[in-house]
Amino acid sequence: MERPSNGGILYHEVQEANLCAVHCVNTVLQGPFFSEFDLAAVASDLDGKERQVMLEGAAAGTFSAGDFFSEESHNVSLGGDFSIQVLQKALEVWNLQVIPLNCRDAEPAQIDPELENAFICHLHDHWFCIRKVNGEWYNFDSLLAAPQHLSKFYLSAFLDSLRGSGWSIFIVKGNFPQECPLSSSEASNGFGQWLSPEDAERLLKTTGAVRRSSPSSTVGNRASDNVDQQRPYEALSREEVRAFSEMEDDDLKAAIAASLLDACAAGANPGAAGSSSQKETEKQK
Image (tube, rainbow, N blue to C red; front, side, top):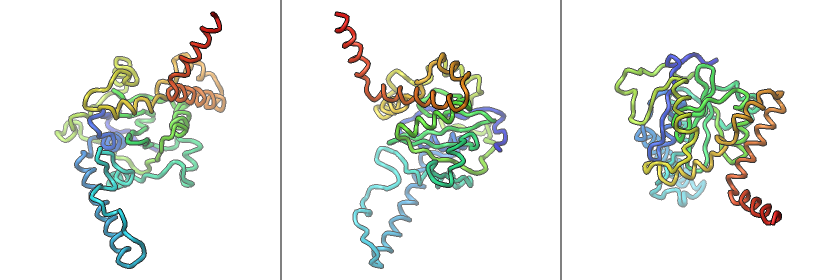
């Protein structure tokens, strides 16, 4: 069972350049424990070890090293995206294990994700985490202005929707760090912020749950693409949430999942609604 951390304060990082992997790891840990230089060092170390393995295999005639020895890293792209192996190694420093949600060992979490404490989500070049803090679930996506509270009945459907939209999801297991010294000069990296749950809710209401306007120049086109990929955040209206809260669990999950998938489909085919409307107008004529 998760123990209280940081006195109930939430740690969130807002998107800076292409550092979503850094933001993801730090929000899993709930503190500014890693910088982009730390993850780059992990990536470089992994590249070195992988090249050594390939060299040994090539020398033994087991296989050909082939194109592996290109100058490009296999664990960090030119755009700054890190591999899952980098995130795994970084979290291993804190004795945390990262496993795919779709593997056999994760079957209990597939049935009841509430049993876990953290999930890492990845699609294309974007990472974010869903984390339980003080018994409550939050979406710590760096494209959000603040952590977004997820009710327990919504968590399972949200994860199902992400998987249905092509996201890779990983479980983070282990004993999470419980305290980060808020007063320390090291407790800030320039884009991290400490928020009470109430402050986070107010900030989201002020700015909108998702940045619907064009992202800032530091995020660029990449974040704009990711906002489109993450339309499940906007899929449920307040009226739907109220209606869903009165349903039985099985009916509830099915209804939410259907609503989220419909929203994703609409986002993927934005012209469909306009076309349908146009046809209706022609009929009336």
